Length: 147
Image (cartoon, rainbow, N blue to C red; front, top):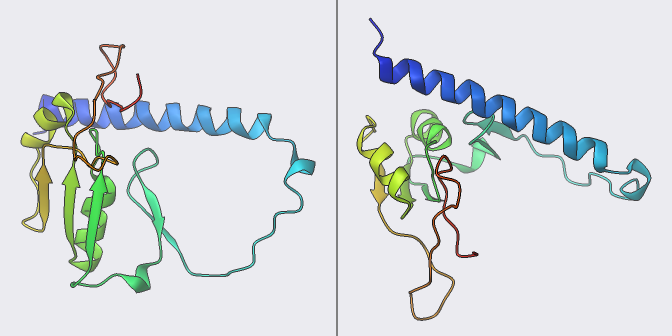
């Protein structure tokens, strides 16, 4: 029997996929094909999409193996990419996110021993410290160094 938590996670994943699809369509409508016609693909490589439609990325699978290390910065509430990399390549993931909602969410997840989470961010400043702002929308998850 599935728990309420798993059902909520699936509903949230579907909702995020819908938001992603709408955003992708809006961006596609705003781009003038003539303005990007000069751009052409010059390098052909076999890439694959890892993760779900919201929190996934393209990678070149042939470059990953059990010795590979992935630094996943700003995980929010989605580690589908990280899990796919670990599952398919047995690599190690170091994930970082100082956002309270992300920290709370990740503590409830069942993760592989190759997934290591740190509840702080990666800063571009030389001091190692930076102001971090939580989202104004209480339903949002991700914080930012920009207000």
